[in-house]
Image (cartoon, rainbow, N blue to C red; front, side, top):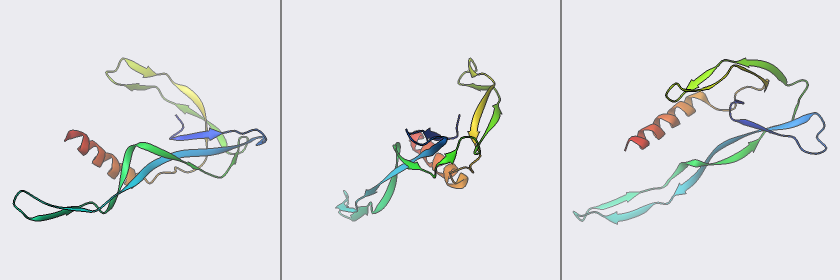
Length: 118
């Protein structure tokens, strides 16, 4: 509903919240070498790999609830086999720009979809 953001409202923050989104975690794939069945030397690794399931919190600057949010209507959303739906609703959404790079997001999604097919 909130485009991947959650808002932390801590004691003492008054009317300010901390928008936070979650980004993929990367791990380094170590380089390794081996000999294949033909006796030829092979190598692999030596690159960062984004993990699909693990994410880490990336908090942003605090924002003011009264100044940085607006009411938005969200249309009905039908998913799955068409029997499941989320009705029309009204949300308070922040006025911050999107936090993700849309081009990188589509490339990553394509790679993940291809990996699922294998």
